[in-house]
Image (cartoon, rainbow, N blue to C red; front, side, top):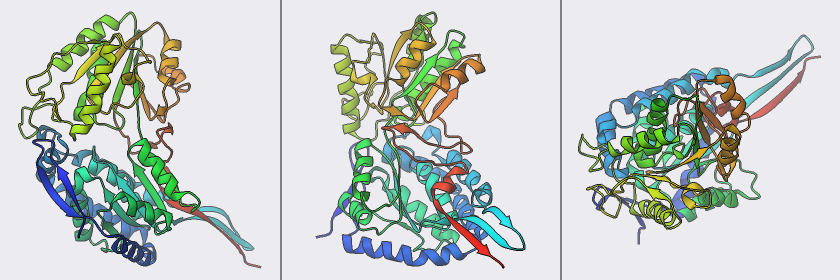
Length: 458
């Protein structure tokens, strides 16, 4: 009997689409085709690979209306936000623009007696395991530079956004990327692990949970296959005494609540200088109360359901536990809250780091806010986390922010903004957020290996 995978829409709990799961033998055959096709792909001029990847991006750009509607059905993002093409195109375009520089050989000597050079060569087959929360943008972060670098790519997309993998494959194939060079496969966990354990792939890029990342590393143990991970986060925001309160509220609350809080680098805890604390909380509560929770297909909806009922269940549990331990909730239950995927966004005060809502990843529309007396206390609290993806500081003093940033255990520090991937900067994390280097020119170092040439001429 063929195993299938259902995509359950958070809009109403119905089955939005079903896909057959690829059997193990077929998955290994697909991986072999990818490996067999890779050498010819890598032999093409880099300019040709860049052109084909750009063309695929242009094709996706003709599908933005479908993108917005399908994302609403698959993971609940309101159609008013128009899909993901802006960020998708920004990342793809930047990675294409810097590819030749990022892949350029490092010339050591070119003389009458010797030519010494370090080249960047592709790993071979790159397995990209992409998440559902920003399904186009997170996938393209690795797919584009991996293909441009000369790798073949196998994409395994999340069960919640299966149609995105389909559309990416359609676009790359229509652009002229060979079907065996870019494959979108529907795989179960066991087969995915087996592909890694049996060395059917040469590099793994995983974005998802800490548990998922640990499973990837266990599968790769002893194989020497590189595993790049971006895992959980509990990203902090800090509002210094000199900050513009209105700008801090707008930036941090959008960072906490956009996409129903389901953002890899979303703000999950906020520390505010005690002199601004009351004003910040008052304005933050007003900001959240202005949101409209509802059906994501309604153009007036500002916040849709969480992608799955089980995700909302975890957020409710964290809120309930915090309230039982003395926290204060500031947002009354909204009419659209159904006790399932549709979840009222919440602002909590009187919170401490003893509460899970301030320690564990929530990945939903809840934010805890704490007062701090100075930078020293803020740094201590920001670092009191098992995660390290991003941190955001609101202040008028760039020198002070940079000094604070040097002390924060994180991958990226923002000033007066948050929740954004700048494609020119390396996307990376530390601690339980994982390790890796995506985007920027450094992505090409991650997706290739160095190869040294020492050519003695005489």
